[in-house]
Length: 340
Image (spheres, rainbow, N blue to C red):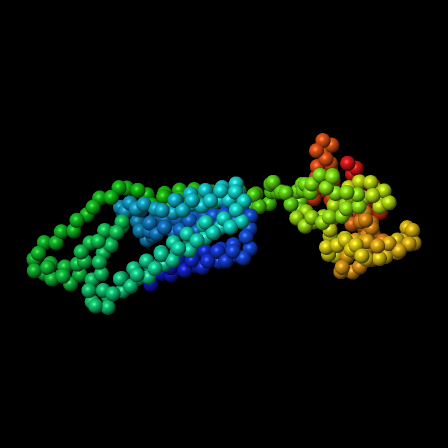
């Protein structure tokens, strides 16, 4: 090979995207995969433009006639990449990257195979001593004429005519500049849109957003139910537990972040009454113990369990928990309880 083919690297990148997407599906993955296509398209367009532009003016004088470049498919690749980024932002497809990665892997495999076959065809005439065919831009094949044949005919007095085809005067360096800056701006804009989509919370329904666990009648007094998606315990406190009212306790222990379970059968002395009581929130990591309202009574935790904002619609009695609004726990957690 005269130069290193880029297609093995593209194929490896596509296969890596397929493996990562299958193992760990990611929301809006189509946008991230399409951003990779935009970068590949931009690089391919730039290298193609540099090849068309040829040597610098110090090597190739500016007054020499320039050959008109053929059609380029890299703008189409860039356009498809930008469309894919926009689609990835709009649609939350966890496996959307496969829409890009699978065709990219197949295309890279085909292109790599064509490059290998082209190298084999180019090397075959050199081994037999025959002149290799001359391929023009666009794939036209010209009959090969060896220098020895030309020299023999010229020595015999034959007139040798070399046809010169006039080509449209197109500045290759202008094409290079326009395509590079247009592609760069398009790629930067597309990547910026993807980063904004990744960093800006939009339509969050799990942890970090508003979570609706149900209506008031679904949680009778004394109920404690864990919601893993929201990472909280919904507690309907009775009057004996400091209520009445609803509390949303963040399941994370304030000590080192372990998930705190409710242990119905665990017995511990209630320090407020000095009596044995069954049923406590108790951290399995270091033993921090909390009341029904998440108030710390024992253990290395620096404070009580943190509380999330709870609202109840007065008409529908639907409960809403805003997991993005968290208040540090205090001994007065029960005062934050919201009554229906």
